[in-house]
Amino acid sequence: MNRCKLCVTNDADDTGSHVVPHFLLKRIFNVENAKGRDQEISFKISALDVQMSFGRSVQPEKLEEVFGDLSDEELEARAMADLVVDNEWCKSCEKKFADLESFYSKTLAVEKETEYQSTDDSLGALMFWLSIIWRISATGKNNLRLSAKDERKIRNLLNEYEPGKNNDEFTKKWSPVLDEISYQVYRSPDYYKKIDPEHGTFLLDGKNMQPYAIMVDEFAVLIYMKKSHLKLKLAAFFDFENLDGALSNFDSGENITPLSVEEYGSHISKVVEYMKDIKLDRYRGILNRLYRKIGHQGNMPEHIVGEIIAQMTSDERKLGRKYTHEDFVKCTTEVVLKHHVELRQINRGR
Image 1 (cartoon, helix red, strand yellow):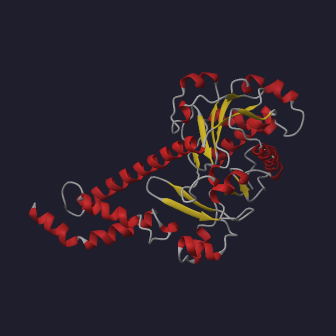
Image 2 (spheres, one colour):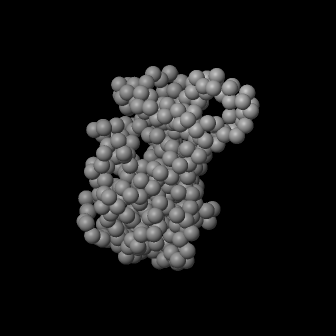
Image 3 (cartoon, one colour):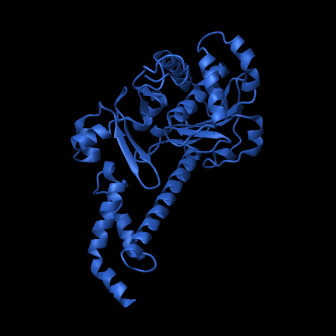
């Protein structure tokens, strides 16, 4: 058995652990009114595909509604895997993560319309957010990747930190490192309750390193590992980097900058537009290459491209089947075959 990635001493014997805390994920992924774990349905969006997965406790009726018929192979392959991991760390280190999550979940009860402190345990709050970005990076999930130096730095901090205990010696030892780190937290409390349910919220992380950034449900968090990164802000994260939110560090309490539904929604709209533009650009590029590969010149006629996209987005298609690579291939084949006579005439005309 592999060694735990956090303590690197014990066997990695923990199973069924969430990379991102369930209390944050459940409002993004859980089936309506479902409580507890293994009730998730998730859609992982990339430039050319949408990968779906679900918890093992999701009822068959819900799976039928979202996906249509699923083969036994699909049921096994799509069982929730992306955000639940086995044998990455030991049970002792998982308890440390669980203690951090239990502590931070209580801060959600505090919410105000103006800037406020969620907790005076600023070290615990910082370690909570560091634990999330470290777990995402260490397990290779999603886009976020810490630099090798930052991953080691955060691992050392998490390994020696003891949630709920006196950490004066820890703070004294690691103050040169902790003093460099700051972060911003933006929050739109209960955003998911105040919007059209079809719009939803996201788990989104960026590839950027200055700052590291993550959006999860009603939170957006930007983490700066060096003071110099505050001035540089080299990476864009859907305009959150341009907000002047309050900074927090290990000894100042955690400051929360609240955002209205409209403000937070404007950033989510930028995410949606960004993903839409990327996908459409990739689709058009593939279709144009296909068009030339089957003997034509130039680009595929726009009305045919539009028909393929329209068929992919049709409300008649099961949500769980939309926008996947398989669906793209199927829609493209159907539409191109439908227009084969027209395409042949175009080719002859040249």
